Length: 195
Image (cartoon, rainbow, N blue to C red; front, side, top):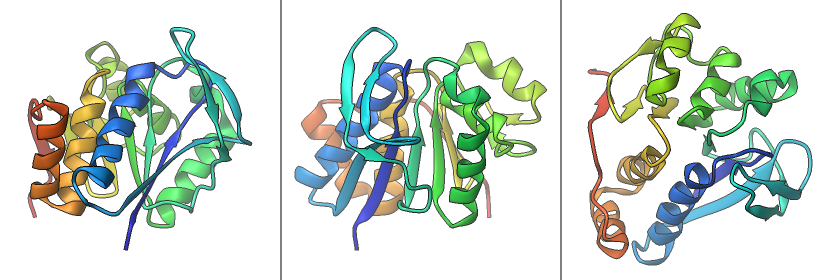
């Protein structure tokens, strides 16, 4: 069975926050031999988004909150932080069994939806105080895996989050093949709750 991944796109999204994970997941499907299906999605309908540095990306599909096994919310602008509909759908996705992951300030969107309150999490170093003030238990790690909530630090940590999710869901050998193709080795600590 394939791992179904959605990456939530919106105007102002930081390019590296979404393209790093997209690259890792694409290589997992091709070079790694894993069954991974990745889709870029928008909250309301397909269409074009303008990223943080002006890159324009055509996003083919609308986000279906229960239509994936893993949802990645990249950081960037604060557009989604104030979007009550997105917050409601994030909660609905997690309640339906979707693993919700945030990269960089995308974690603050998860926080605005109430998903990080009282839970171990991390974000970009400039956002950690806000995350803690909003009730998150901030952990000093590059990736924090709390089961159905996985968070990562700033910008390039999205690559490490995706490699970790490939390791967790598809196996270490697949992740190792992806690292070899990308000529990149996972950085930093992955924090996991002890069972």
